[in-house]
Length: 159
Image (cartoon, rainbow, N blue to C red; front, side, top):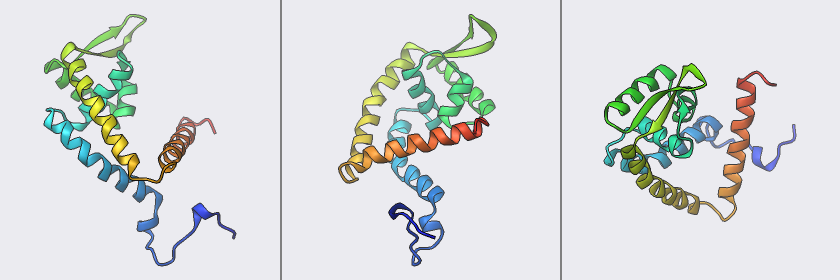
């Protein structure tokens, strides 16, 4: 069986050390830890930051969309959003076109908080990408977008 350069198997490396899922999770954990410390200093939990970041881009998103982006189960995220609403960071409103749907909106306080954190997140991303060779960051992001798109199609049953 012929292997491409990107699929080489290092027989001296154990399974886990070269396993894609481990590498993705470990890289995410290590990269996120630094920025998530800033998120916690701002008084947020990580899922709350993810909700605010999503609303920064798409204010009025539905909870199903927020759950996907926040990487949280929908019922758990609903409880988090209720807590965020109680803290004055977001508000929930019924969708004017479909009363069964709930949309989540940034409050002034939530918008102020996320607006102060997004530049920090961008600086952190720039720092992380600087750890890679010149074009590796662009290629990595492109590859991850492609992988996510392929997995989304497969998950939705659109083989």
